[in-house]
Image (cartoon, rainbow, N blue to C red; front, side, top):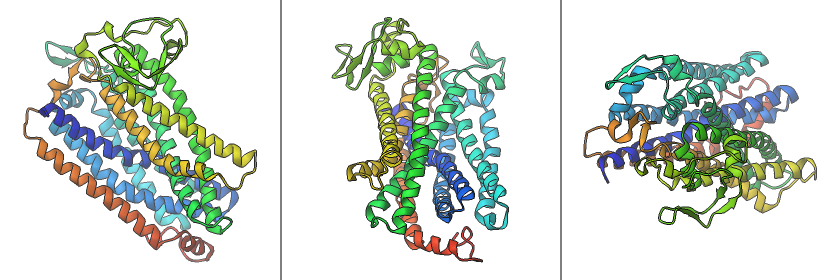
Length: 453
């Protein structure tokens, strides 16, 4: 492996690991807020117990998300000095504001955990609203740097020097709102389906009709409503993302669809893999005219093919597979969430078929896999550029060699962290069962949130 490939693999592994915790760290506070709102409306203590238990899980995940995010920031400086030189002069604003977003999240999280039973109901809700806002803001601000990489604005490079810097123009770059929307919606979707996974698994293990079964059934239905809504909204936002690619990164869109020749009435190709030799998508299913419509809401839209660009500027052609994986996962999640709601609300099914329950168990990991597909597609599809048509990846990487050992050591660290998270979560929730929390919630004078913190 070249030093460039090792550097990319090391940072990619770091981000691939961190994004799991970052995404759940945005989605789970929203689920906590929804459970708290349900409790305040219905006074059903089972919803407040859900919020409490999800809060504990969120605290553990946050404990890993913070150091992995710090590692990612350090690696940006060490592995990509050329990139950070531009970012430091043009796009430092999101990093500065993100500190305040994290402060808000941590402050109001502490209030909710340690003072929930001593403050008014509206204060409890307000606390979780600020936790959710802080978590979402952190994600959006950091992701905005990625948006800037795809649509860099707010500066000029004259004779190799950065001039005419406008930090707010760089901040509100053309893809800011599309990217922020996609990150937000997909994170809420993922948080909901993580709850779906746990709830479905616990329902399969519990005896039907018991209080434990009903508790997890309520959590399942809440997560399916939220997961269904946000998976659908994510798909609609994906349509807008395709239009942004058509306008600003046409070679990325062409690679995503394996389109080599520029054409109007361009087909959308589902499945298969891109064969460079024959310049076709093998085993793919074509939907006539669909790509042109997806690009600009017109069937006669001219979509640029890869031949419009020098071959050395083509993204890797396997991004077609990543794009299909992301879309496929999203489509499945929409289908199973609305299927469950249909069976429950219209057909009054109290129990779902076993095959559907196991799909729900798989939904959380599938949502995370979809996030990984999307993130890798977004970053790899921008290659060979770190900053699109401004700074190439090879020109932004460090000149340091012997990075292989660091790659191995960090991979080991991430493996240890992953096992530690699973162990801590399993240990805590095995020691503090749902029935323990339900019994504690029913006893007057016994604090629910501050217990076993």
